[in-house]
Length: 433
Image (cartoon, rainbow, N blue to C red; front, side, top):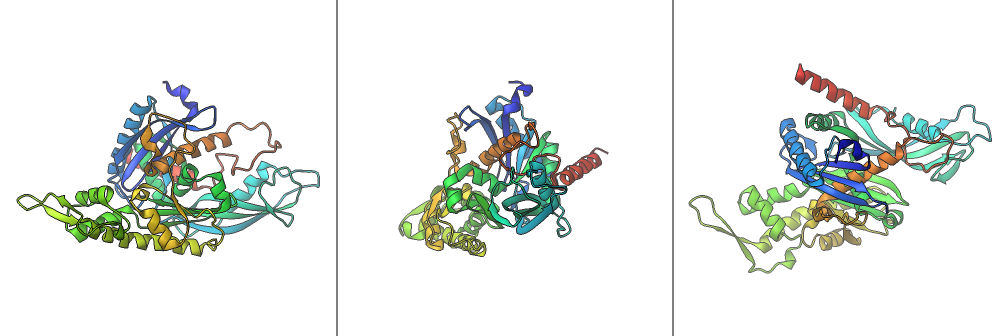
């Protein structure tokens, strides 16, 4: 398949703490995503969602991309990239514009929405921090509240409540630099819990009120939805890797052995294991094999998981939405595969819980692995890529009423993406000099 035929194909690149995954998909006639191929590589250069070693990250990206290209039978030139890490912050803000020369017959257009969003991107942030996403929650037109889509309405004063997500510019530049060095272009930088939410949450859950908890290797990402709108986001700087480290220390074994124990025999509830259940670990050179009690292993995992879930519960209460979440909690990410985690989460939070699999929006394909919670972010990045294509297709006329999806112009990203690209270009030029 030649590159010029790839207009309907999107690639998502999930740069995680434990793995780097590239997923390639296309949309079929029914609107579902068909996964064409995927590739993954061990992530050695990323720590808690942030790039800590450029060259190791570049090498891992190249490996994942090469495997995805071979699997899908396509050449990948551009990717949608996820961004996460403990530097991510969120806040709420209300913006307002007065439409110039607006008479009673003149309707609100997409350009008015763009002007309001542009205005939010001008907010003063702490040094080194920039706005990544500006997400409208509801609009107010001439003091009339609760409007979801103001396009086509008449009005002079237009306000909106926004959920604003910001991050460190250097972290984004390092991601962008790694992708460029791997020979790729970045279409969009997308907050990872937003991508995961697209992959595993249903429209009914978003309407009823739901908490997405994406447990990765380095961080646990939270996104809370109500009435189809994202209301709260947070990043907890703990993930599956701290559990592995606890097992390594508690059982006095190698880290790779600890990771294998966690994934194959680990449980989040010690009560589910019997006292006499043991597993034998090979000893170091010249030493006897070591027997590990599965009940002790589960105790170690449960203690750390309870700590992470208490952080999650605090964020839910901190959002002020804890009484409005009828759909409960959806767990996804690699950490969601831990046995008995659903039961422990229900016990700690008192809310209903299910495990989120990214298969609801997927058509049947030969790549079965992507239906695992481990690849929820990658699948979501592909879905976000198609949203981006839909949003930036040539518009018929500016006056044509349309659903408000956000910004209509790819060039008006409020400076964040332009600054990331500018910084990456400068760094690459410095390297080549």
